[in-house]
Length: 178
Image (tube, rainbow, N blue to C red; front, side):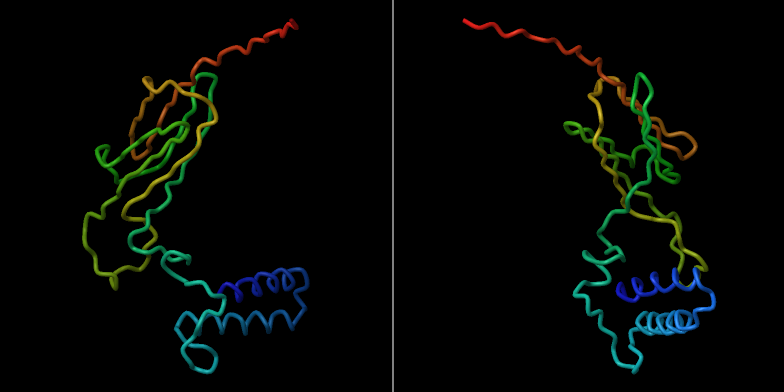
């Protein structure tokens, strides 16, 4: 499937730059048909499709997350003169379901968003919201004062304020010869 996507990407660019390039348009149609057949589990001949790039399409190595994998939390990080500020939209998560930790210079935010109602899969028209465990770790660019860290959840937005430590002024030491 990845090989088809790479071929398609190149052809799409060619077709956009020259809309009259019929060979690119025909090949795009053929690739789309192959992709649909692979998605249905069959190749062009109706045989069981196999991905020949040696990687699984789901689970650990692929792009479809396994059930025990965590989602990645989207964040904004900015700094002021006094602090590093991390913001994230995590609507539907209670404060007690959020764990924020710092280990050396790494900030980690973990949590779990639980679905309130069990709705049968066949009832969904769209299902884009992520439900389950999530986490995000970032390396902090400066030293912070651990005792003054604040975390606030307001209207589904988590704000973590990490006060910067006072930067020690570098001193120069002159070396003497004996």
